Image (cartoon, helix red, strand yellow):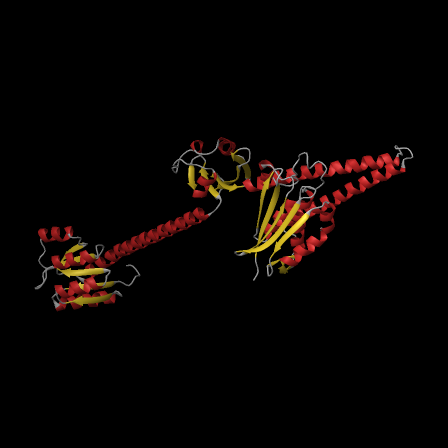
Length: 491
């Protein structure tokens, strides 16, 4: 007999039968409850689930068939044993059809009862174990479902595209970022071949990896979505293996590297332009110095001094260019140390006007100003001085003799607006569109003799942008230009 202590309900209207069964089963370490009629038996049997039910077939209120049916409605797996002194084939068939486990006639001896209970309890344990396994399976299925739901939620929330492929080159899993990054518009089904979905270059790389079955930790594959480099993605491909190391497929993490590619291109262009801009003045200085060292100009001392002066001017231009390059490099690297303080814009503009006073007089340029009081910003004084130097210096440098320069500074909503206007050579539409590019300088009949690094306005824009400001330009060729900056004001 099982070691499990069973709980049994005996439903019988005969007191002697109830008590006799209770004593016998109690000796077998069973817990026994009894009910003296069918109604009480239904009430007790439905209130809790017993391991075994012994039900008398003939009772004055409810017969055993009704009691059996009522208990089975509540507990379909209940083990019910019909006990009767009026055994018949019809009653046996009827109770069996209703789900009775055994049908035993009265009277029966104690050994027969113990045997029946032992066999029935073994069946009960099988039922309980099956139920436990089913509940465990359902619990695990629920956990798997929840885990899959969490996984789908996490994958869907990623900015990187995720694509999982099996050994047959079929799609197993993907997220919305994958569709967006590769700009896939058609509907994709799980199990669909990658041949129908992926760009040719990426598809070919993945198929080669699957066919060769070579060991690799991870591979990277760049794919151009919009040539030449308007949109470029990088697929980081990693194998998926089971516990025995057998290949199951691949997972590709797809990332947009367009901005990185643009930075690489810009860096390359910047280096090329810097080399070009440095080479010309250095070559000129070298040529001048070679003429002087070789005394190729004879004894004309005045001519030698002219070449030395030109060399000095070119050297100063080189130092200025190098300083501008260093400033841009520091800005892009975020290595600029700023001492932020409350600045009076009127004070800084007046300092710059005094600085350029001699140049204004030398070129016979007239200056007019409209600078309001109480204009304050939070910024680094050196940077704001540098911005004004570029704007005012350009208004003087690219102006005409006897021209005009107008400087204004006013409150404009949440900003302090500073404008510098000149009556100089102006710019064409194309020149204006490229104005803030590194090393760009307008090339026309008026600018041939004007020196500059082509980085001043680039630096000015980077400084203004750093303070969440704006810089704009209005210009007309042969008429003049007006530069306007807006910096958030400080109360």
